Image 1: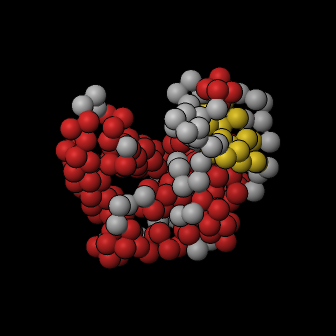
Image 2: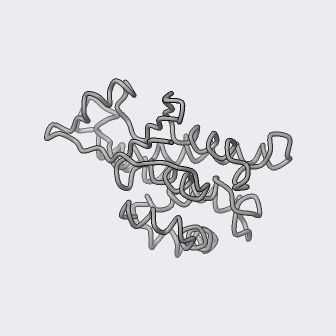
Image 3: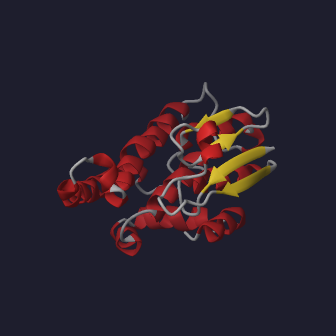
Length: 206
């Protein structure tokens, strides 16, 4: 069984949804922060950075980094059809956009909502937030342009679309983003209307 260390609405949401869609046994362990913002000490022994998501595999080994988890889980459960084969022509764009979301959109999100993590000078946080907001907007523009008139990036539903839907849910003004990019709106609705995904979204407050 997989054990997913999570926090509602965090990067664990897409991993949780993927496990649900793949219909594999898993459990979620929601972590609570102490008054000083720290996570439990035992969790630091699993992941020295004390970040969610952290995934304990059935063999008890530990994975970190949400994009790596998405890729690995989808590859390990091919019957679900959520990842192109390594030899497929779809594999390169699949990996390209998965990593674009992980490094660009995710990175901007962290700077937007947690600017204090990226400076030693509190006075700099407004500028960090403003730049992150602009970068996230630009990154969604790039993704929306690449998506074009397709419902899903590869023309069929994959783990990539699930990851993208989570990123979209993090937009500082979700309604404005979906109005600006109707194709992102259609993709987001298609993904989150799936019963198994919807249940995870509700649990995560997304």
